[in-house]
Image (cartoon, rainbow, N blue to C red; front, side, top):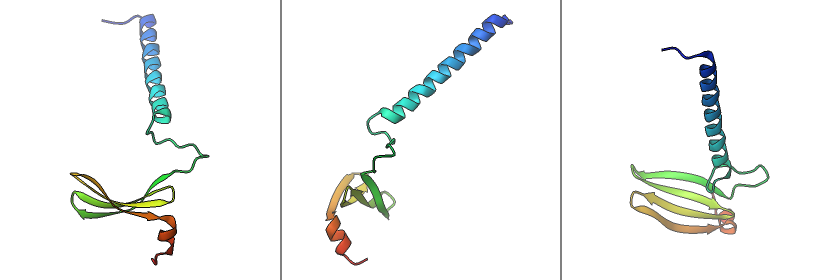
Length: 96
C-alpha cells in the first residue's frame, strides 16, 4: 500500500497547516484570554506573592501584595482565610 507522491505531498502540507494553526491558537489564547500570564512591558504587575511559609503539609501562610496593600492569607485544603490587611505606610514603618 503505497501513496502517490502527489497524495503524500498533500498529506504533509495539510498536517503542517493543522499543526501551525494549533500553535497560533495556543499563542493567541495565552496572550489574550482573561487571567492569562501575559503582561505588556508598559504595565506593572499589580499582584505579587511576597512570601510563603508552610504551616503543615497541606496549609500555607502567604503574604500577597496587591498595588500598595499586603494581605496575609492562610491557604489550606478547606479554603482560603484572610488574616490581616497591611497598608503600605504601616508596612514601611514596622521594624524588620
